[in-house]
Every structure is written in C-alpha cells, then in structure tokens.
Image 1: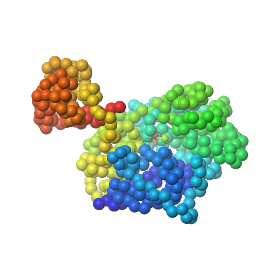
Image 2: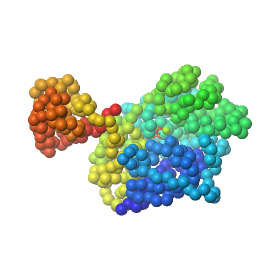
Image 3: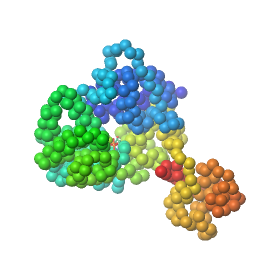
Image 4: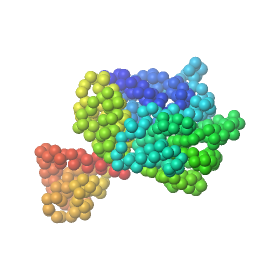
Length: 450
Ligand code: ADP
Ligand code: MG
C-alpha cells in the first residue's frame, strides 16, 4: 500500500507551483493548505475558504492532474474540507471577497523567472524550432528584430518556458536592460490594486519608463476585460514606440482572441509564431532529458511507450516522470513497461469519449495502413487492402457495441465474414509484432480522435 504516494505528489506539486508564482501568491494561496489525509488514490486537503479551491482548480487544474490521481469522471482526486472558522495564525492574507487578488507589493509584481527554463534546457524539434529561433533572435537583439514577438500554442507546450528563457538570456547578456515578466492575470490584479490605492499613475510610470523588455504570459486572460485591455494597449504602444521589446504568449493566434481590433492589430505588428506539439522523437528526447534531471534512468522502449501515450501536453510528460520516480522510489523497482503502465494508469487512460463510429475506425485504419478509406469500404481483395479491412472489422467488433449482424450491414458483409476477419487478425497478431503495434496505434487514435 503506497499510503504516502499522493502526499509526496502533492509536495512535488507545491515545488512545481513555487517556481511559477510570486512569493506572495504562494504565501496567500498555497501555504494555508493542509494535507488531512492521503491514500494511494485520493488526497484530502483542508483549505481556509472556498476561494482557495476555486483558485487551485481554475489556475492549476490541469497541472494537478499531472501530479495526482484522476477520478473516472476526469476530475482530479482531491477532497476539499473547509477549515473551522476560528481565525488561525496562518490565515491567508486574502480576505473573503469575490475576487481576492494578492496584495500589491514590489514582490507580487515580479514573477520570478524559473531558473530551469532556459534555451539550453528547451529540446528542439520541428514543431518548436521556429519559435525557439525567433525567441533567441529577440533575446540577442531586444527591440531590434521582431516587435512584438507573439507566441501561441496549446497548453503545456513550452510557451512559458521559452518566455522565461528570453528573460534569463537578457538578464545574463544585457545586464543593463530591465526585464519584466508578468502574467496577464498579475497585470490585471496589479491594476485593480493600483485603482484601489489610487496609485495607477505610479504603475503606469513603472511600465512605461522602467521596463526595457516586457514579457507577458497568457494574454488570453485579457479577453472580456475591456477596461484593462485599453490600459494594456496604451502601455503596449508606449513601449513599442520606444523600441522596447515585447513578447507575448497566448493559447490562440491574435485574430482568434476576443479582443478589440486595435489590440489584435498591435499584436500582429511583429512576428506571430506558432508552437506545436513535439513529434514522437522530440517527446522521447524531452522525457529522457527530464528524467535525467531527476536522476532517473528510463530505458528507451519505456520512453517511447510513454511518449506514444501522452501526445498533447509536455507538462503531462513531466507529470509522468514525477509519478514514475515517486513510484520507483517507493517500490524500489526498476522501470519496465509494466511498472509504467501500473503507475501511470490513470494518466494513460483515455477520457470518456463519445461513442466510437465505424467512420472513425476506418479513418484511423486508413491512416496507419496508408490506404484510402474508399478502398476499405470496397470489395477489392488485394493483399494491401484485405488485411487493413479485416483489421477495421476486428476493431469495430472490439470497440463498437453492436451485433455482428449490424456491423456486417455497416461493412456491406455478412456476419460470418466479420467473425472470420476477427479470427484471422487475432491469429496474425500473435505472430506479428508490427501488426500488434499498428493496431495499438489505431486503437489509441480512434479513442483520441475529436
Ligand atoms: P505552456 O506555457 O505552453 O502551457 P510550459 O512552458 O509551462 O507550457 O511548459 C510545460 C512544461 O513542459 C514545462 O515544465 C517545460 O519545461 C516543459 N517543456 C515544454 N516544452 C519543452 C521542450 N521543448 N523542452 C523541454 N521542456 C519542455
Ligand atoms: Mg504557460
């Protein structure tokens, strides 16, 4: 029984978070949380008020899933209990009010650059090469190449990593330049605070004259925040006109953000660069790099196994390594595919999806075997179509809850043809490793297809 497993994972999560938020935010939101109980599958956290839960889930929901077990309904397995009302010494500084931004101090303004986020620790592949070289260009000659540099891409693909790398590089190589790295959320919080303390002018002065390079993370949070958008836009224009470098990250390209035309146009002034999901080889390299940092040695078949299963999010790859290393330490075992499967079961599980259709199966089979979907539907008996067609039937029987008769109707075949196909494929799979892998990939693709 791994009674302390989720407790360890929680502590690892706290280390992860500590590097990503300001000291004040950490003190406000995370320090008051207590672990009340931890089992292998679940953790119970005591929180001072309901806002802490909301803050945690809305800001770190996906990260939490990388560290902690996930329930069947897709939620992270945390039970929250609210601490008894009597004020404790460690009550967070936040008061119970609707939005509770961390107090404005010099400290909360500054997001510490994560020392691990450097160009040298960013693994390059075809999906992120362009972004990396643009970022290096900007870091070497701030304000002189592309301005702004706008980086967009999905969650957990390394945008913040690249943003901090720029900051780090500039701090080390252009010592006189002042770097300011801020999340859009922190910018808004600060503005709210300045409005309350009537210090907006001071804040404006700071951003417009005391900053040489402004790194803005997650601009999508500016959507639907009209007043802030205008303020941000003004700051933006002032800096650009002074040739101060701006780098922005976002989960969408500028034109898809719900922002004013003016703001979108500004963001498209410079270079817009897309960060994609690393391909399999790059994911393997990232995994091995992260494992090495943790002193973990993962055999390459295991690295491939994990990288094949986790395809959409590099942060989840890291989460897998964290869990695996906790598991290995506790069990004192070598890493094998079985151990990986055991310890990452929830992570590797597919989210419950809509019903799978024959169409999805045919498409995935066609893609893996490189044959047209039409051919799979037809009657040609050539070998390069016959086997893929049988595989489609085999998977349809396995993945679709319908009678053989109905499946036969879909394929335009009798139910005995379907049965025969299933039997043939099963037999072939026993002897043919490549076929097994192909079928494994198709199964997975069908499950993850949108
Ligand atoms: P995003 O900001 O796009 O959501 P992050 O920059 O926070 O993603 O990246 C998530 C995690 O994945 C980070 O720990 C980061 O170091 C890691 N990561 C992402 N891409 C790479 C890469 N190409 N090489 C090394 N680590 C990466
Ligand atoms: Mg980010």
